[in-house]
Length: 155
Image (cartoon, rainbow, N blue to C red; front, side, top):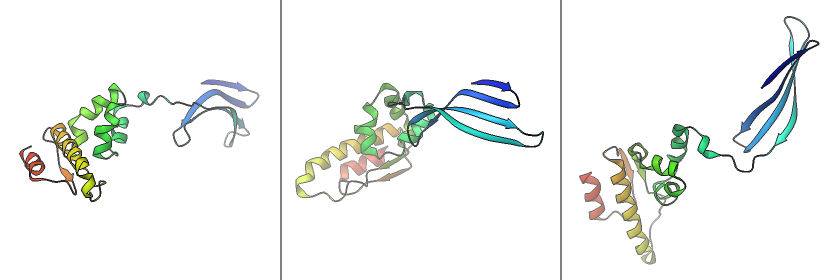
């Protein structure tokens, strides 16, 4: 950021701001006109609109990335998020990510989906194991066999 004062105007140039809702990086030129000692008017002009196509999500602090990943359901965490990159894999290994296991998005299974039920059981067991004793809440539906329930109870 560069600050320049010239003839009762303060210029701040080359200031950048990243807007997460639009995924755009904006460069601003701020101009402050000093009219009196008690009055300051602000005129903001967009100097350049610079669009960053791929923001670097790896630059987010680890705790923010963890917070974002915790909003995913268990199946998405196990099958998708944990294989994105080494950072996400390490975050997904953290037992605090598994205090709540939510597998309720899997509605009632039809007869043809019983094979999928076996996959859900494996994912559930994996998530319970990852919790390393930190599990507080678990939500399952339509696939909770005695074996899965015993596995949960023994952890």
